[in-house]
Image (cartoon, rainbow, N blue to C red):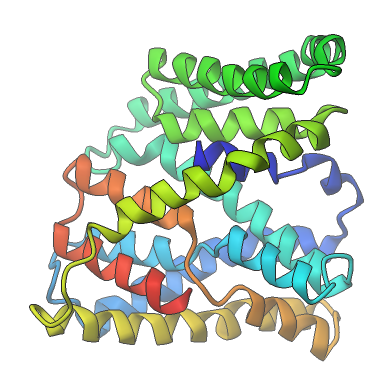
Length: 303
């Protein structure tokens, strides 16, 4: 449900008005940050997890920023409609799309089976196409017919989420991907604002459950101070990576000093998506519990 709520915030229609600057920065930010992170963590050495896949997971997780925190910050500072705010939100949308691709490939990441990975991508693409077609031709009329009853609108939106998640499960796609696709599909049709306003009423409740469950997995740092030290170093690198990657790209595209600097500052925290990726990585045996602890510490510190 948290992934569904994140998907609802992604309005793909805004890409039509996106300029070259947003497109290039959005496409480059994630892979460049992952590449810089892999290089840094590999040469720095991460004793908690000696496998290369662990370093890759850590680099991926620090490359994603928190939509919930950033939206709240920009709204409080009245910067959502500024050029810097729109650039920040655009990069966040691209990060969500990158995360969707990663989640679709995550279960086959260790096998290196290109055929299975290609099939997984095709399944995700098919689910996206079907969801978008339904959201364009079926859902608007359906929601229009029930728009006068707020309770039914809310239940129908959740039912749509569960239906797409059920289809994802049937296709052997991870449920977070299905939920994200369901949210993105609803965000594109004319009644998305009404649906978001209804879903927002349960956002705090489900977000609280998610973060409480994450908090229950945080180990006492006094029992293993080495993990906390690694998390501190990784957190500092996360902040530095935004200035190493985001600022130069935006500045080279002639956005000016302020507009290039503000998104780099706004993006200096870890995303909720990173926690979902890390938890799924532990469940499929890609990374250790210690690596998950480091990622959770980074999330808490940067938040």
